[in-house]
Image (tube, rainbow, N blue to C red; front, side, top):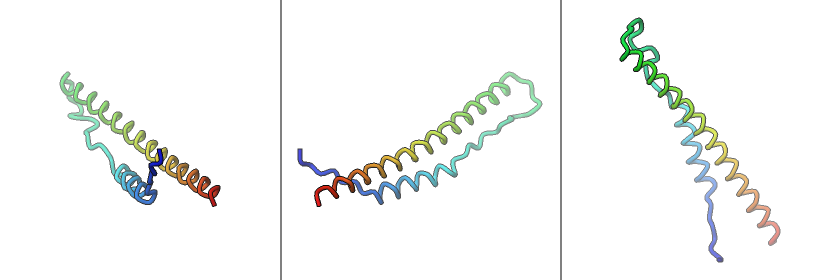
Length: 90
């Protein structure tokens, strides 16, 4: 098992940074109060669904940002470990 694993840290960081900047612009454009003042059951249901979708989108964005941070930390940890191991062979 002498296969080398190559990790291009700059490329990974570039991709993660692009993902992070894209996530910053991620917003939901759902109406928060569809047809206000209307008491129809269908309108109430649409408002509930819009609220649920908005909550799901907010949770997705938060999770995405957490995963981006975890990825950055993992990449840095791998780089540090690689540097440490490389220094023992010198």
